[in-house]
Length: 102
Ligand SMILES: [Zn+2]
Image (cartoon, rainbow, N blue to C red; front, side, top):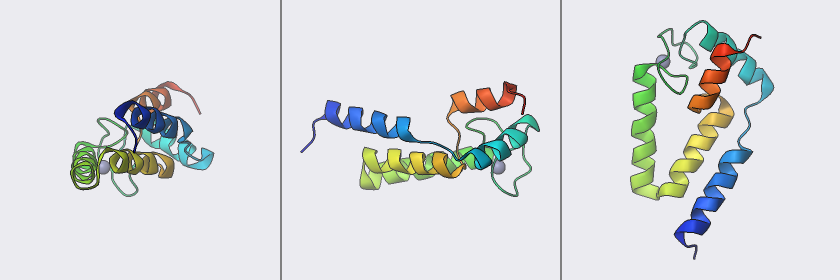
């Protein structure tokens, strides 16, 4: 049984291990620099986390649903998986991709 601070440390360590493959990252950079949502086939303008308003709302809905049904850890793992596969950006990455040149 973990206490809250042990869980927090584990989740942080997991988040730090999340790496998006380079090829995916280059694709994200092109989408962000064009001002577009990073999801395949979506041409809407990105707002936050590299996603358009519709897709970021959908992400938050899923995240909350998982948190309520399966707990905080499962929700963070979902977010890490989305980050790794390139369908969600932490906001710091969105900022970096927006200003870096390729
Ligand atoms: Zn979108």
